[in-house]
Length: 520
Image 1 (cartoon, one colour):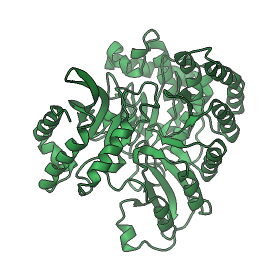
Image 2 (cartoon, rainbow, N blue to C red; image 1 turned 90 degrees about the horizontal axis):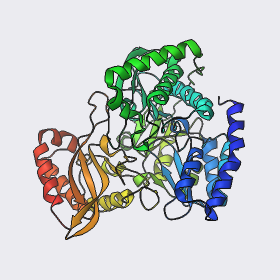
Image 3 (cartoon, rainbow, N blue to C red; image 1 turned 180 degrees about the vertical axis):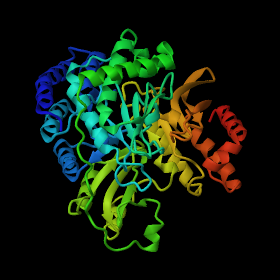
Image 4 (tube, rainbow, N blue to C red; image 1 turned 45 degrees about the horizontal axis):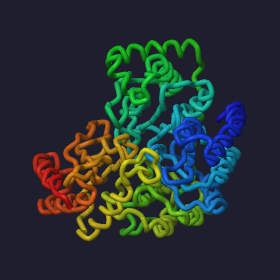
């Protein structure tokens, strides 16, 4: 559990947050000054007015009580936009100054930390969303991630890091949380131990993580987190924010020295610290009842859990954006269902877990407005015009592509899940996708126009790990037609993108170049 001392320390900092929000509203400080202060509280001013607040939800878990808290606050503050993030959190958008000040206090009173949601702090610790219920997992990694998250919150008041720190735990090689290229990542192994990676990251100068060790005892996860903090604060770049992420340590130290320093700091941590306690793995005691109809058994949104007779329903709102009404609809559907909770995925999917066969149809019905196929589960960041740094509107591009491609009625899988970032920072994880786009510009007839840089062949699966490579720069208005042409080409071969691309990369590049030359 998060100790009371950490809660009290954060509460004492809140007047600083309010004072600076009020100063910004009065025009006494500028946006950049405000960002340097309020980011550490999990809040930023939006580019075109209003504020956002990022709720820290360890491992992306949302209990019924937490969902009800969110529903109540949406109503109280008339919140009209919620964004599911690639760090398994929920962002509340378009808030007034009064609302963001009240919400940050109310969240803390409820038990939700926003501290560290931004700024030079440890972010929300990420966990494979179906940890504990996934049939193919090696083991449930959530208790260890929870311990790491609590340890980081406990350490946060005394930390002064060069930049943010992202930690992830994967329960299998599927690696949905990108643990192998986070600042620090733990990947479960069949023998009940972890492999550990560090100093990876997406964005400018992307890097896969450095493999530190195998056979890591899960009870020592906090000591490995401590070693990473020691490494980062000792060798991280405090002079240049552009080079202050852990992945730049691979350039300055080299892989071998980085690994050596990490292990030396680990030994220091073992001598000086007691491992953070690990809570026992919770047992799901709910029993299944009923059986799925043939149609439901074949439904792509219904997954069988490793618990006999229990199921998960997936719901992916396009672009990971929730309407103001949807949380209330979800709560209404699950409030009286035993042991049911929500899990947030880094790609913007919500999983509703621990359902019996008899409970599945109603949940499917309330979530029927989401993505209809793999392509429509594509990922995007909040982007311009909300994000201060957003260059392009990634959500606008995604919705334009979805609208265009629904007309083609391609078979599921013909086009893959895309990852779209509004700028090179990769908040939409564009370098991790089979197809990715990053906000860019392109000169046409002497004028700079809205465009995106195309990336291809990224893969997060630990067994095929690779970063996508840039292939072309295409005008935003042309991209939907490029994807339609790509889909037609793959459909003509009776294939899917996953099967087609490995044997036709030259055809993909030729098509990309063809559309890169189009002006509209």
